[in-house]
Length: 453
Image (tube, rainbow, N blue to C red):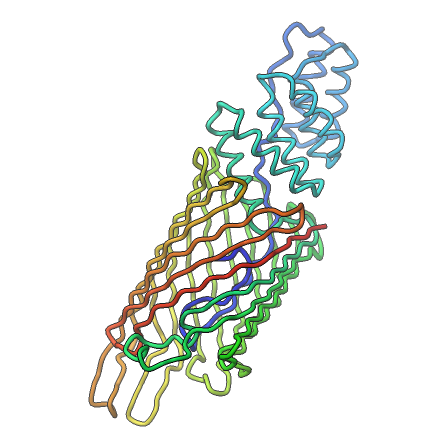
């Protein structure tokens, strides 16, 4: 369960590359506080009110001028400092926003909010470690459950792939153990001596904004994943992805529409190529809650020995994300529809077109003794569209699979750039056809880095 692309443990002949695009995400709490400063002179109060109105109209330059006029007229309150910080932030003048927010740290009424907004400002300035420290401080000192939830959300996002305004990249190198690289069925395990093996895995993903800004823009994406086994070279994996997307961010709602092209090689032979349309939407609610939806439509071409994979695949998924007091919970569902060519061999027939329903749940703990930890559970039901014809066509059986999976991941920051991580996963597939029964465990440890510019 890695936050970066990795081979999906699905089936020996249907492995897919997952390279999520890097997306700019910021949990915005930044808004002006409209109440007029108590005891302010008439001129200063009027300038303050004009600043509020200009900010609400989106005219941040005019809002800044009005707030500065209020300060020159004698208004000197934490509320004005906060509004100045927010306005500087909206104008992209992060150093000045930071200066204003820091003046609030000594005020118990404003300190937790100042820490949170200093975290947002540090994130925009590329100071990821400083942002994490600010969000953690805000979560510790605030008595407001909404601010605590927002801080937990921000920490969870920073714990994943690094976010970038323009260009972002992530790289990873790991070594591991695979208990069943061959997906050997349980019935044959006793007679198979080499289904387990050690491996090394390297991956990289990058995103670059071609045009536009953080509110709306065009992005190019690319990725590469390599897995090499120590002895079972026929199960080595190589995958690549290139893509283009148009993304918008209005603060509450983020959308993305794009496409990508995947190529996957299995044991040196091309497994499949896929051209995929990808549509995503995400909306934020109060108290750190999020709803996400995604639709993918892919046309797949199997390689020379895998022509039965030719066809179409659709995926529709959604999840809800909740920030708790000291954790982050994600629950989701995915529907997968396949219409493939399937495999016909003489009088025998094997369906490669499953309909799948998956339920998923993840719990994330942003700080467990300095480690970011997460645990994931998954249950997947697969029902194949057409009955298999076996034993020369004399036996007709519709394949039904149930797969259970658990996974755990922990990572610890070594520096602002590098993290060390450990991954463990276990999957168990139960099928009404014994040849598809299998269990598989994987353990990986490695280092990863996230870059942004």
